[in-house]
Image (tube, rainbow, N blue to C red):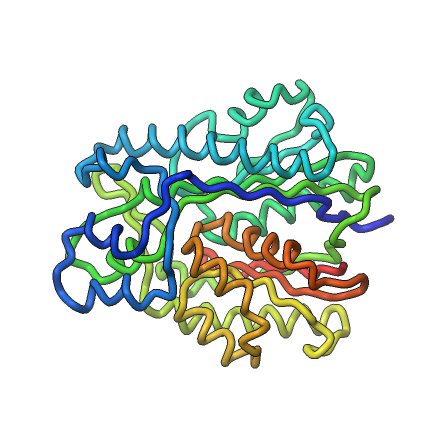
Length: 341
């Protein structure tokens, strides 16, 4: 049975782009340490589903959730349409859709809205991967992979849509300042099939270290989302990237030098720097991850698909090239896939 392949990718962002200096001006931060999180982030621009002129940092929880839903559906639809157009596929051909987000809560969530917006068939199967953070797209890809293994003639769609600007929170902690300095809005879609050409997904692997459960995620004081992001994430995250890489190479009887491309989630400058040292990667290996971080920031679950899209658009991959794709998430987890062009 052939492995599923990523046939097409589409990405989208809100039309409004902010420099780090513009975003910093919207915050109450005046001390050099917190301002430094913005200035030294390795990020130049972030897209936000915000009106620059009308934004006020006192939105209610209902207003945040409404902005999340409107924005995620809007940019998610753009990403889906771009992936469908690239594949020459209609939405009515989709048999399975897996959606991801961690930046808003609605019932029904974005999966049902995409089905309605694109008038997908009544028999479409759905999975929504919620509250699994930046690793969600990898988990959704696993679900699409599993579906196509069972139904190889089907078409599967993975959609990650995040409005991180609906989760800003101002308090005295350093971790919320870091979160406000790096997260952004974006959506990405991937179309998968087993009977078409594309990037072969050779398999998936997970690494879950529950002793680090409390290091990353969300809390909801008075119902408002507040990002939990321990400073330990940089070190533990890079160690887990190394651990998952070693396990993946061992499973597929590969040597690290056989991997040409590294599609690592652009978690932040510190995580990428430490992962580079831990795994023994070059600047060239992380060029696409750093490019996405610089141009877009960390868009949570959508980010790793942006990195893959940058690699594909570069035209540098050749048939037979291998790639490792990894994202980190709460739990604490590293989720990965082995790719072959």
